[in-house]
Image (tube, rainbow, N blue to C red; front, side, top):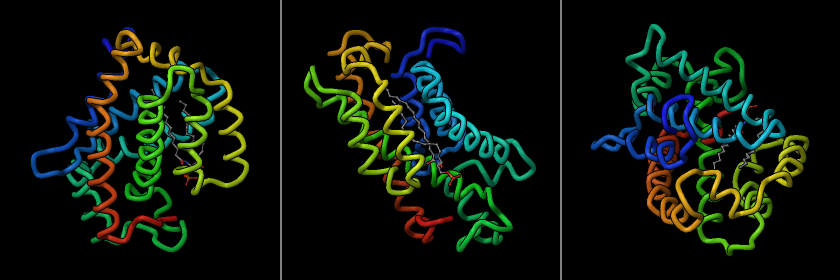
Length: 214
Ligand code: 1PX
């Protein structure tokens, strides 16, 4: 992403997922959310057919940004401090959404599950054959991850939208990091960082039994 209005470059977006992990393996929410904003910008460039997805993701990013700039902002510096604060103060609904329908913990959990989809999708693109279909890679990675948490109607809408995805090479070019071959190399460099963020979050949520938050 070369500046706000400049050409979109996926490399710079993915780098934020590298910079959000500290030496103590904490996940900084600021860069994490910036990474998500960049991804949504990319999603928007794929056309209005994905606007129902970006609307939901943006609403979640916005909820988190409000916490990060709100009265308790120092509690929302890292994922670890957020979990500690919200759990210790009873700010998380664990059975059904009621008093705290938009806790940071449940909101990040939705993004975290989507990050797993992203990781699988980009890995599928990276290792796919030149003529493999992006829609198939996307559907397979969705079915193996996020779809498990979505009702039928969302799954249906998502799989219909996936059919509109461009070919693998066109997709690699939209990433704006050079030739398809260069994009594949970039993905190979960037994906371990996404896996790392995913792994740290998964471990943290498992420790606190937060992986099934309503
Ligand atoms: C070069 C590749 C970059 C591609 C970037 C694409 C970024 C996609 C970001 C997807 C973010 C999806 C967040 C979904 C969060 C979610 O699961 N929300 C559901 C549950 O929320 P709730 O508050 O009700 O508990 C919500 O019901 C979801 C609604 C919208 C539909 C979500 C469909 C997800 C499909 C994901 C794939 C996107 C297609 C990308 C094409 C490349």
